[in-house]
Image (cartoon, rainbow, N blue to C red):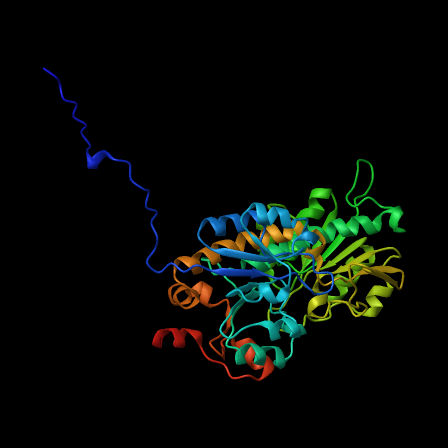
Length: 402
């Protein structure tokens, strides 16, 4: 008797396609990264690794050819991670979200389309009302590096760039103290049997804190000036080291400057020009060959003798004192700065996609809402409104009625 073969197929144990969970509100983002056209801006807003993460989460990233070169990220690096290379700026500006470091130029503003999103610096001190009116006319939804906050309502991009500027300023000072750069021939810091070099830091914020950390690490003798006792106390607690501190008393400051080998100006004001704390007479009384680095130069500078310089010609000598007054110190270490910015922007972009776009996101997350300065044809930042005499709308109220 012939046995019949029976093939049993159980649908319950058949392999099935994996279904990835997709949020109901998910929106694919088209992200454009143009090459920076501002003078000596070397940073780029996303690294290849961040591009890979965004692409793997369903988004599209278009990078202008050579946009990452100055930060040592090649086009091939981006392509290997899933990015697309565009050969014209116009092609990049077709994306729904534009990521930049510097604010868009007039030419770039003309390329922007109605209702696009923009994430970049705003650089209030370099702008005119024309810039904002163009954004408003095109109903661009714009976030500013200077205003973007994290969950603890801190300013992560401002802090990262300040940390970089503070640390880099001391390394720059070390270069200009050296004999090869026609400096005094001093080692920044100190060695056994010799007095350490004297570093004066003006400002106890993030830039001042990291300048102080670096100076102490190199073995220098440091004194920090600030008119806020709470800031001075916080700086000492953060660096876990007792350093000399003082309020900005003219007599005490003048004495410290006369003994200084390096002076770092690290005072910042959120909304206005920084005060000029050091007069030309004080500079005249400083030692020849002293290195003066004005990190506050982008807000007008703390010294009466400072003038804006650039990375190509960064220094000049006045009254025997070497002045370094480049506004964009972070661009000097472009790869590190780019990675820092990219690490902050990537989670924000993932959140925008997961929540279904900008409007849904800022409704849900108040800390991201605070980063916006234009929304749907309205200026939503009160400081910018009063500075440029443009009507202001409270974004919290707008969101409550939407």
